[in-house]
Image (cartoon, rainbow, N blue to C red; front, side, top):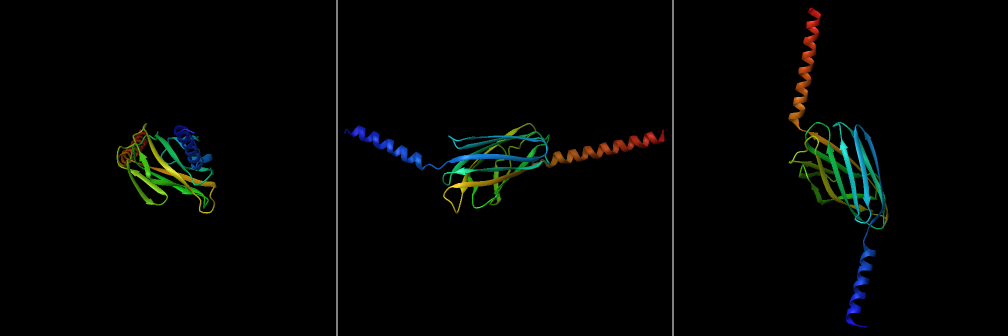
Amino acid sequence: MSKRIVDIVFAAVLVAFSGAAQATVVEIRCNFWTYGDSTYTWSFDYDLQHLTITETISQLDFSGYIALWGLVDTDSTFTVIRTITNNTGITWTGYGLYWRPTITPGYADIVRDSITSTHLQAITFPDRWTVDFSGSPLVLNGESFTINFDAVTRDTIHAQGQFFTTSQQNFIPEPGTISLLGLGGLLLLRKRKAERNTAHIC
């Protein structure tokens, strides 16, 4: 057998074994529970191991969360690509992401060093399950921003099986914008009161 054939066979065996050893998510699902005017879509690319979530937030005081669960062949890492559109009419100066397990021991944990953001690029970690985004550039009304991070599945009992994770978020409005909205509301109330007084006198 020639040296070239031996090299080709060795390379094929190496590729086969490395492919078999690669841990992957074999099934994933998402559910969204929201109270307020917001929309979500999601998809998972099993070849790239990419979870894509697209959101449009239309009111600042909405509430809700995403429930994410799936099956893994071993502890696995997948990439989350989350794009959020600000349709609230208010500039955002901050964003908080709460990513935590609902059922242990199987859950998916954020890999902190992997986090990137196109806006609000100052990233801090108040606790294990919280990621806060602030700084610049701000997220103006009508703009979208994208955060990327890797999530690694953790299971301290089984080598493979299910994981369950939930995600909640909040948006911090620009203080100046809120002050202007409050001032506008106050002026409107005064105007209505003055109109009522004028009508009463007439």
